[in-house]
Length: 411
Image (cartoon, rainbow, N blue to C red; front, side, top):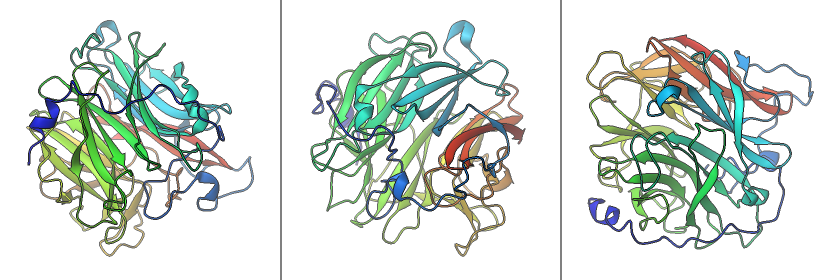
């Protein structure tokens, strides 16, 4: 099946609503509901490594900023004129109201300064899993170089919640932000999680997300919607929607290889899956093949592999596709046990994902990583300007606070 028809429905509006007047805890981070089983809040997550607020983190690297920093994202500006080459990072932060923190590095990732913030009233009803993206070409009235930011809202709005994914834009490289649209509003109490953005080959803005609203047929599915202007959105179309009703594909990350092919990495949790990492490719960023198929599992040349929260970066190493650099939360043996490289490993591949992947050391080492919303959870990667090193932002506990750490390492 192809998604070409749904893309051309971009003039149809997915049911959207004005910003919800949500109520609930402003400090609860609903960062783990995509896992198998019942939704889990951090307060109910696995025991923290230390109850001592002054305890030192196990992670190596330099602290990004003080206080809670979750779900880091990292991009290098390439369509922003004089700002090209700057690194822009985003994190989920609290003070105690949840907000998106925006960071900038002008020294190739050695240090970051906080330059902006995105504050959405709906964050009072629960807020998580944001993404940041630079438009490579104009979309509607938004010119190339516009920064887009999206997130999931309303997870903690009560038993009758209606979650949403909302889109914001910045035309000054992240300093100030304005709301563009509500991309999706859940038709029921199911979750809408982990938005990821990319411009497809037709110049439309695609947004991929994890959808819990199709239960009991699908515990979770990976879906996509399209927009020609960022304001009105197509009907949703499945990217990964498996016949196993307990399967939970989610946490999509999309990058463009040097040859123009798009690659999507994601995890599949639930029932017969173990949150292993998979990938699939697309010529246009819209048609990803048969959504009923799980895709290709990523395995290193020694059989080891990642589980949970994969993210990627593409490095220009002279190959036709570029070198894909992959990070995940947990690293396990071929048999599924914890590997000695758990929390300290990256995988690379210079063949567009085909064939074996190879292990290298991660710049930020999080040796105590475990299945929890903080340690090494959805780390962020970007190559240095000369494409010979990789910048990483990863999270870990400092006492009971989840903080972000950054470091640069060789490829």
